[in-house]
Image (cartoon, rainbow, N blue to C red; front, top):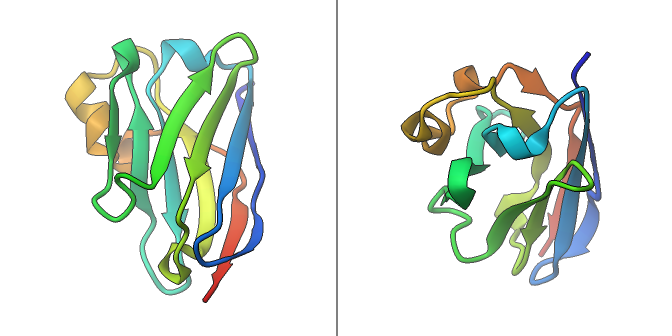
Amino acid sequence: QVRLVESGGGSVQAGGSLKLSCAASGYAVGDRCMGWFRQAPGKEREGIASFGGGGLTSYADSVRGRFSIYKDNAKNILYLQMNSLKADDTAMYYCAGSVFGIAWSTCMGRSTSSFPYWGQGTQVTVSS
């Protein structure tokens, strides 16, 4: 059974940093495309970062240059380092995993429909 568990959320002032973690069980993070998504109240869930085969990554324009997605395959954990946080980054953050073998273009597209496995989310609140 696949289980993804996020942690590391919290409250921070604008300009601060947080590191989110997504611990996986029953699922090998090193073999699959994985992504981070977020959903603010009243808004659709959006894909903000994905990590595909060969270490390829993609980012939404809103976070590029501030956020970094990476994996620790030995620990089977996906991370999201978030720097220079803004009030607009306030949202529930979710990690998600794909099935094995999806196309690189699909992974980089960060569509929610490409990720069947989801964590429960961790809240990030940024105060200005």
